[in-house]
Every structure is written in C-alpha cells, then in structure tokens.
Length: 262
Picture 1 (tube, rainbow, N blue to C red):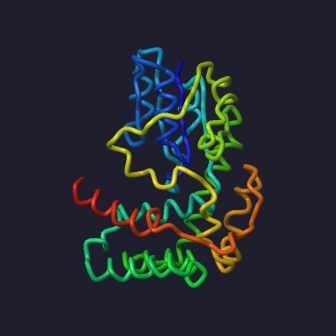
Picture 2: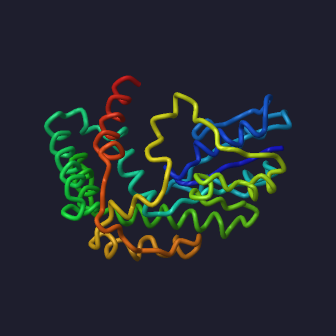
C-alpha cells in the first residue's frame, strides 16, 4: 500500500501523517514534506510507502505522475477561518522581526489587547501589523489567502480519487470512512516530539472568538468558495468572544523559545 497525504499548512497534515503511519505498521518508508520528490518516491522498492506533501501558492506540488505512484490519496481540509488563525499565529516561528525585542513587544502588546477585549482588535489588523513589522506588503495578504484556498479546490476537482477528510472529523475521531477507504484501521496518534510545536488547540471553532464583524465582512469573499466546496456554512460569532492566552500570546512565546533552541 502506498499512501499520499496532502493539505494546507496548519490543517492537521502532521497529525494525520502519524496516525496513518501507525496504521500502516513497521517497514513503511516515509517522506515528510520537503523530503518528498517524485524521483525519490518512485525509487522506493518497498510495498509500503507514505508521503506527505503540503500545498502552497508557488506551484502545483502534485501532478498526475505523483498521483499515479500511490494506491490511496487523502486530502485533509480545515475550516478556512480556523486555518487562517492557526497559520497567522504559527508564522511567528518563521518571522525574523521576533529577534528585535522592540518590535516583538509591539506585536505582543497588540495580541494581548486582542485577548483582553477580542472585539476591539480585528484579526486582519494583527495580520497586517505582523507583515509590516516583517517589512512585507500587508496588501498582499488577501491575495495569498485566496490563492492558497483555490489550490485546495483545484486539487480536489482535478483528482477526484483523493479521499477528502475534514479536519473536524479527524479531531472528533470520526475515522471509520477513512479506515474503510485505506483498508486498515486509523486512530488518532501522538505527534513525534520534534513536530510538537505545530499543535495549538487540537480543536476547532476558535475563529468564532478571533474574528470580528469587520473580519467577517473582509474575508467573506476570500473564504466562501472554499467553504461552499467543502461544506462549511456557519458564520455566527461567539458572544461574548473569549480568547485563551494559552492559545494566543503564550503560544507565540512558546514558538519563539522553540525557534531559539532549534
């Protein structure tokens, strides 16, 4: 059995990878994200192969020849609004401005204001501040998001052989359909220690606390095609909204510490 996993960053691909790996058992050859290439995978002689490929905006990572290498294909999708928040926070692991203590303080102050009074600060204003402090053009954000979501839709439409797994079902351990598709049992698994920093809430629906009405209006056109394609509909926000610092500013600080030690 040769299995290919794909999805956007921060959509549960790492946890799914470990769950399927456990189900495939010993002797499985694995390729994780950047370690994958068609040439290397095609050269594997083992009958058990598992590869994870992230979708990004630069090029179509998965072509027909890649798909043809594998017996089973899984696309994991996540509510785009939760994915936006998770990706926004995780970016702090990669952005260079966190090494500037003054800029870091400005950013953390803004996030903490959001935590104290969620309705007073829009998510998109924090996103733009993040980009400005990094020296990037914040006006490119929505285009980036739109292209990212379009790529997932394109993959699903181009390759109907992909089993589409909703992240929310994965979190709720509703995996019978996936297990039936793969032909072996899949159960939630712990992520390997070196990838543990990617985990934040291990839940869903937190966008209802982070989004404001301003965010909803601004991101409606960006997210709606993805939502329509993969079955996300609700736009109601929590009232009152509550943001736990453990999944906000504390999580950012944990990422910064992890960045220092890497």
